[in-house]
Length: 419
Image (cartoon, rainbow, N blue to C red; front, top):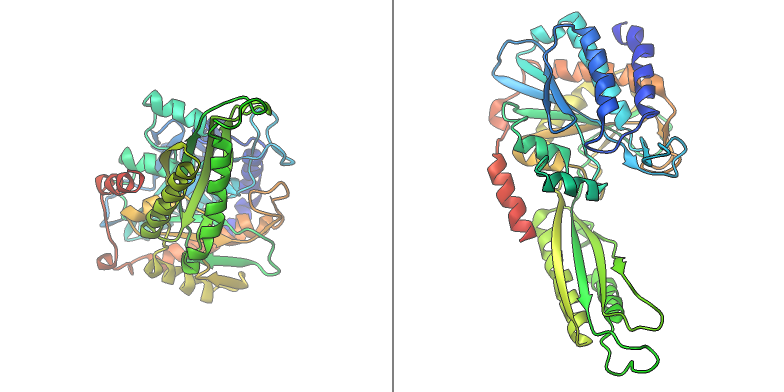
C-alpha cells in the first residue's frame, strides 16, 4: 500500500520537473525541487554536492561490506520544437529523465519511512547526476576552460571527483522508447559507444568564374570524403552496428568564390572500443585520401563521447527473478542492443552497472511527441518492483563476481582512443 499512498505526491513532483526542463550542468531548479522533497522526508538528511548541480544522499550511517548506488539523471534534452519545451532555452524532457528522478524519490521515501534499508546487508546511496545528454557543448567547453568541470558528461565528471569511489555496483533506470501494449520492463539492453570526428579540408580560393583553374576546392574534397564514407559502409561489420552521420559544420562559402576551407563532422558509434578505433582510422584515411586526390590538405580532431555500455548479466539475474514473481508487470525485454549511448557506459568501465527499462510512454524518445501515458505504472507499480529487486539482492550478492577499475585507468583508456 505504501507506493499507492505516495503516488499522487510523486507524480506531482515529476510534473513539476517535466514542466521546468533544464539542460546539463544547469539543473538548479530541478535540484532544488528534489532537495526540498528529500528534506521533508528526512529533515536530518546529509546532502553531498558535486559538479555544479550534482548531489548524493546515503540512507543510514552504518558502513557495510557492499555499497550500492541508485542513479537518477537530472537533465533535459535540447528540443525547442517539443510541445513542452522551455521557450528560452529549448530544453525539453523528452528522454524521460524526469520520471527517473520521481522513481528514485519514490524508492527513497519508501526505504526511509519504512526503515527497510536497515535490513539490507548493503548500504544504498542515491546519486543525482547532471548532464547525461551529450549536448550544449559550447557551454560545457566554457566550463572546461574555467576548470569548473573536466568532462562533458556528468558521470565521468562524478567519477573524476570521487563520487563513486566508495560504491561497488550501480543501478539506473530508463524510459523505454515506443509504446507497448503491455506494461513492460527491460534488462540487458546494451548501448553503443561513440566519439566525434571533425575534419577541416583546406584548399585554395580563386574567383569561380575568372580563374577556377588554379583553385583547390575544399568543398569538393568534403564531398569526395562523404562519398568515400558511403562506399566504405560495406566494409563495416554488421555485428558492430556502426552508425555514421557526416554533416557540414562550418564554411564561409560564396557562389562566386571557390571555397578554400570547410569543416565536416560525424559521430561514430560502435559496440566495442576496439572497433570504434578501427573505424576511426578508416575515416582518417578517407579524409586524407579525399584531400590528396584534389591537391588539398586536411586536419582532423577526435572528441570522445561515451564508452559502450555492457550491462552486468549477473546483477540482471536479480531483476529477472523479481519479474518472474511479479503479478503487475506483464512483459520483459532481454538482450536488446541499441545504438543509442549514455555515460552509464563510462561508469560501467569502473564497476558493474545495470539499467532497468520501463514502459509507459508514447511517441519517439527524444522526439517532439514523446510523453508518458501510464503514470500509475511509472510512479507506483515500477518503484514497487524496484523495491522487490533490492530485496532480491539483499544477502545474495557474490562480491567475487563484481569488479573494480580506477578512474586513472579509465582516463588512460579514453586518451588511447582520442590520441
